[in-house]
Every structure is written in C-alpha cells, then in structure tokens.
Length: 112
Length: 118
Image (cartoon, rainbow over the protein chains, first blue to last red):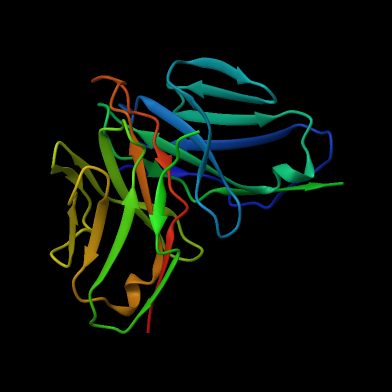
C-alpha cells in the first residue's frame, strides 16, 4: 500500500521568507507528483506537478524531486500571508487515470 | 476558466438514508474521480471512472457506493444506506486523459459536498 508522509506542522515563517515543505513516499515506482494547496473547508487547488528528477519552477514556487531518495519538496519564495494554508503532497502511479495518494498535509502559517 | 462543479454544497441526511452527490466535470475531460476527506484526515481516493465504467476503486468503495454518468455532463456518487462514518467532504475531480501510459494526469477538484449523517 502506498504511503505518503508529510510533517503536519504548523510551519511558521515570516512574511517574505522562504517556506520549505517536504514529502516522502513509499512506492518506488511512483512517477507523478503533485502539490495542492487547501484552505480550511475548501477543496485542493493544484499548485504544480513534477515528473522528472530535479527542480521545476513556476513563479514563486519551486518543486524538487529526488526519485532515488523518494523525496519531493516545495519551496515558496517571498511567502505572503495569503499563502497560509495546508499544502498537500499527492503521488500518482502509471497511466493517465491513476488514483492519487495524498499525504496528510503540512499547515503553513506566514506571519506578517 | 473551466472548473468542476458539485451540488449540493452541504447535504444533511439521516443514518440509513440514500444520498446522491452530483458533479459536473470539466467538459472535455475523460476521467472522473471521487475522493473523500473526513474532518482532520487525509484526502482518500474512492473511485475512478472512464469510458462509462469503473477503472479503479479503493477498499472504501464497497457495495454501499455506486457511480454513474447518467448523461453527457453529470457524474454521480450514490451512497445506498448512509452510516455515521460516511460523514465527510466528498470531492469530485476530473482529468483530460492526455498524459499517456507513463504518468498520471493532473486532476482538478470541485469545491466539494459536505455530507453530514445524523
């Protein structure tokens, strides 16, 4: 059974700082990795996906993937109070319609 | 921007009653999913649906659950006889099916239906 682990937090950072969120996964054959943001009482909102080892940047967000270590991370630069939310790591397998396995999420608090 | 919609936003029901949760996936998407999130817990996969049949389901998706695409736009989740432990947020998601056989599609989530079983 696939497991996806995240530190539940809260991770508290000052406004303008870099927030670093981490995720490990158990299934070595996993190929697809996603970061979602979830505000309290709301649905997961896609931030970005990553499929290859290395870094992928999108605006203030950078996802990092290391398949050998089964580790994926999300960096948020210039953190804003509006970034305060729970960040969910999700892992997919092979094939277009494969299910996602979610971690429990890390709660991020950005203090003004 | 196209989005997944769900109705109702909140459903309250008595234990043992049947409920139907409705979703309208993004119009050109081919895969449809249901996930649930019990308060304070992880988002859990229930079922995926493609080409008018279930393609994958979890252990949670037992005989009490069923899914249907009754027409060209709606996708429904039916719970036949609700239990207290079915109380959760239920999220519908859809994906376009273009990622191929090696990687998983990006899945876009609807706003959810909060189901409360009394």
